[in-house]
Image 1: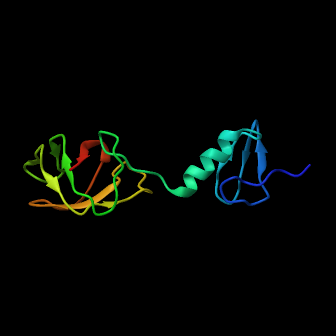
Image 2 (image 1 turned 120 degrees about the horizontal axis):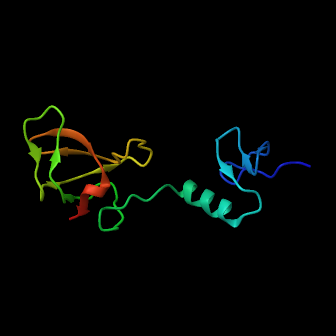
Image 3 (image 1 turned 90 degrees about the vertical axis):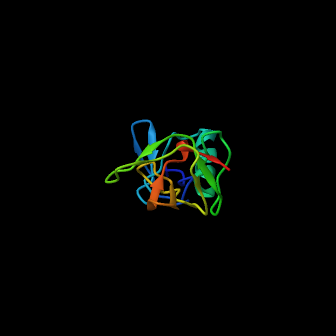
Length: 120
């Protein structure tokens, strides 16, 4: 019996590992016959939506406001609550959780976590 195609990349040579099917091309894992596999794959292919602390979707070029004092490694002071950051760039593929790239006045270029900002 041939294995079903990967719902993420549509390659046909998936293999079984216990109750999961795994695609050797993209590494996607899914349970065969579940609708969640197709839904999950379609969400991943559309790109992940990055939300601020209030649940509002963020986009490249937005301005955000910090909702918490943030300590900066190597700096003697921290970035204060209410600091406005303009023209953010989103990093949806960031693995460390710092999914916003920006320049903060007085601190320079840095990465922020979306959970510490609100759209503003």
